[in-house]
Image 1 (cartoon, rainbow, N blue to C red):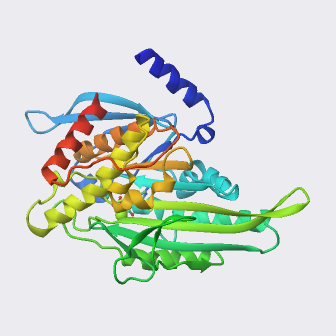
Image 2: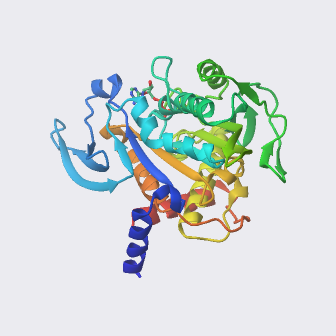
Image 3: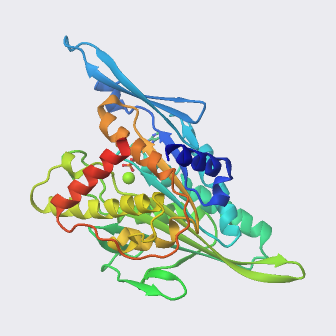
Length: 384
Ligand code: ADP
Ligand code: MG
């Protein structure tokens, strides 16, 4: 059976990943931060051939002066970006191809996954000087629309929203939580969500930075600026392209997702109100994990309805769309546990390539204790 599985995997891998509907999985390593250097941490990650990732576990020697190498593990991804990789290269490798998909009228999505501080927001949004995937994607999209669509006859609409504590908020126009409803044409929509019509990529950076300031951040013991919110930028492009003698209308959709920190709630302060919020964030990430697991296993029922995040992403996962996942990691041995988790998760996501045939509910346990059990079980399975 293992053999068959391997053959299947190889066949799927030798296909063009995009064509077969497989999720493309990338890993981005950020540089050691000043704080990590000052804490005397060393790198536990080595990237070779822009593809292979070696993770090393260290232990303190008994004299407490040196770190001893314990064991290593090897992972391979569609691409792995070493710490000196620039934003443009990350964009070109991971996302440029998806813009082609949007120009074919498809749904495409890019996720950033990883612990708080691993570089998700830097990768997605970036800075004024080094804009990230969101801005570079829009730049590219406008360029292609100008090139390929009829005249200036296109519309690009942006929505920027967050899922925080299982409620959905408009980051472009903060206010009351939005209600999700099923639309026969558009799928799941957030009622009343701002759709901002953009005319160039230049205006987008400021818009998104302002939106990001509206994201909910909560101090936790693990990290003062830890973000428990998932941010989703939805870009809808409507345009006309020439086909033989006439023009046809197309709609392409791009979702760019900056997920909440994937660190386990177990690592943060569990007490009081925050534990509830932690549980809810876990619920969305857990639901995402269980959708991924269900997709990997080729299950008929994918539990999209189990969280707000997965409801919103229903048409952005699985075989019917083009998806890229960027797993962000820190090189520091202090972050070993989180990095290991992130790499296992990314390794698992690589196997998604089945077509989604129908969407129905699977049950996710309500209580946090049961959720934690399920999470631990899934982590154990991933490690086998
Ligand atoms: P996250 O969103 O995953 O919590 P951030 O993107 O905010 O993490 O990154 C944490 C810090 O590390 C920020 O100060 C950010 O500027 C810096 N950083 C992250 N990735 C890189 C990178 N590839 N190059 C340089 N600095 C980075
Ligand atoms: Mg962030």
